[in-house]
Image (cartoon, rainbow over all chains, first blue to last red; front, top):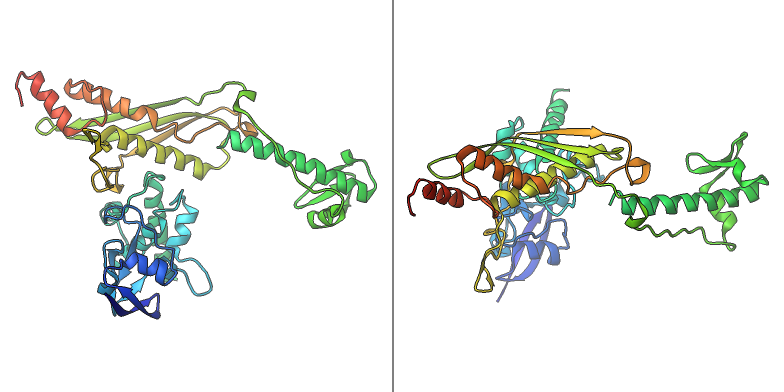
Length: 161
Length: 231
């Protein structure tokens, strides 16, 4: 059984016919070709597949594509500007060693973006509380905290000037 | 990586540099020893205005010889040189539950020339947390030959809330087997921390554990049996 659904992904509208059991991550990666979002654990505990659905963080590996019908989605591909300039969060992850192998990174930067939209001045504890659903094997998390703090400071600096 | 891949890359780069200088010297009409590399070009020592960019050298070499170098590096070629690591941990154990909390960690490394400071520290921190995972959380359960931990939902990795306060000490000496007297750092911080935690737990509550991970359940059992109770 298939259904035709309409997704608005990073500001672009897509209409696709999907089997009803199609997972959102597979729809993004294989139907729309947006392979930035990664599948890690497949059971909703590692956070690698995090995307924003109507502004909320969700695990796209647990969400059926048909449940996103009509929703506004943001994926890692939608974080940078049109001209390719990276977002402050993305740039900070590069500058401060916020990633090593990179498999968790799309989910990390997407979750961190959502954090800074909800709370532009997070404390270290706020960051830990928000990011605990995103696992990373390489960095030991220390530099992820530094990266998010740096991005927050950068964004506040821009707002001031 | 830094040592073996670094040495192979470094030596291949030196061989390629020699080839570039030879071609440049032929074109410029001077001995190879008079030519040196400078910012993407070969220049003549004594007359720096005489220079050829890499693109010009490649064009001059086209059809004659491929500019290519391949080097093999074996670890046995180098003097044996281990990187040493020492780690200290302070723990708190809840006597009612056996739960361990890491209050403070110091990780000390003997290092050579640090080639990429950000990446270097990243290896230390990442390795440390992996070692803490093995020490406290990660357990592959096998029941009658069947793996019991089938996903990251059951095999618990440390998350961002599990990181302890950390201080890093680097004892630097510019002697190492890697290019530019570098030394290996990757993963050396994984190994000692579980043993340090086990020793700290023993120091704190007198329970000696020999198998990982050091879970609250095992410590609780140890506390109970030490007090002569059975669980």
